[in-house]
Length: 204
Ligand code: VGL
Ligand code: ZN
Image 1: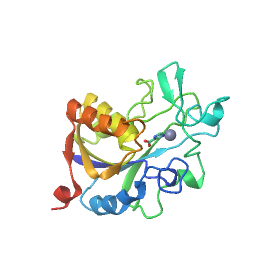
Image 2: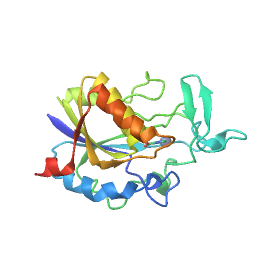
Image 3: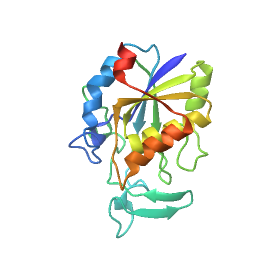
């Protein structure tokens, strides 16, 4: 049983947003086409309280994209983004959300960031997604959305650890690319055993 996992297609990750992923909005029409081919559609939503610990603005004399050491490791500091209830946290207005059956929100605990849709960045605190998928007998996840080198990559690696077959739809993801993180992400995902596919393959 397969499902489409749509990661963080939110205004703040699209051009004009607070943490814009280059060409982030180009995935929207592709994802809208793919939705028709899936019976199970799951979305994730980055959903931070104001003053979240991953925001550079929450730390004195820190700028976005600098890092800090926290109890769960190194944390990249981001511009304020996807603050709960703001327009930036809303899904892209052209994204078809009608078929979405569950929305997993993440990053809502102030002291911890969450890239993966399975675990927060301590790699322990669960989002509940594994339980949902197992109870629904889903074995294969087709992942699309933003950003390839953060939330998509961390979800793919965790999904494989959780026993799922993870398929990355290559033309339906876009990355941020900090200091080579995008190339590194593709290598990590492939080495871990992710399957790479394209929307053409899925639509044919
Ligand atoms: C993301 C950085 C911070 C993502 C979320 O969706 O990839 N990246 N929060
Ligand atoms: Zn975030």
